[in-house]
Image 1: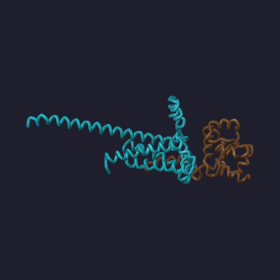
Image 2: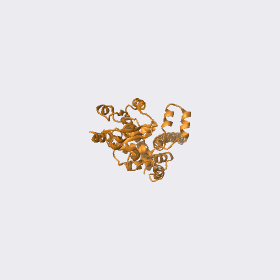
Image 3: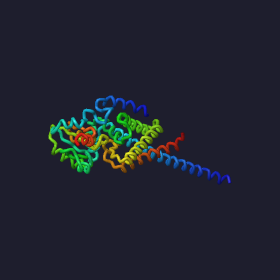
Image 4: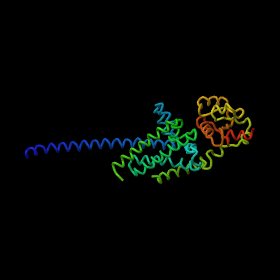
Length: 194
Length: 131
């Protein structure tokens, strides 16, 4: 009996060690997946913020035509975008008075960028997730309300890049982003409960 | 995070203080009344930013249709009629419409035209003063 036990013990240890290694690899893979999602969503919000602060029209057009040399030149000559354009975009929803639209046009792009950076650096992570989720919900409700009221809106959510997007395109994009944010929220809660 | 974003936003607001009006969506210098527009007579060209069907139903005499739905098609037609030095008055259906503002913005930015103005009250205001 003792012999059998002695023979089996190392086998059990090997199995246990293998299972721990497999679990660690799985955890690492899962962690990498969530971090990629962090980076993807952060990238979307950083682009959304920058497209309202900087005039990226030429740069985007050159990148779409794969003219990288021109795109580099555009990068060097970037100029600030007029906040009046984003303020007009907010005003198009006909929900807020003009002065509030102007204030949000100055504030929202920076809020998006800072919250996106918080996702990247995992600093004030849950707060940033909450702010971004709430803002996406508000934008989506705004788009829905505009559609119901028959307003032909120019969203400006991603600067001029989204200017000619259709209503379904806006909606699907927002819902996909919201789904990503909610997934991150759930993962964060499971990994580190409040 | 929310408080931190206030700092650059405030800086931007100070930087753009002369370029954006906190009172109206259109800077007062870019807006004009029906009386002012009539005063310009032939020195100005009218641009109708409403959809095609509304333009077809009625429009300011001599106005040229230039809406965002058919922008690429209509812009060359407009530029063929426009002459340098002529002021441009853009209008849409009413005080609450945005089309005139957008068309005026695109004329300034994409067509690099200056002296582009938006008619206060749009087609409704013009109709009130002229019919």
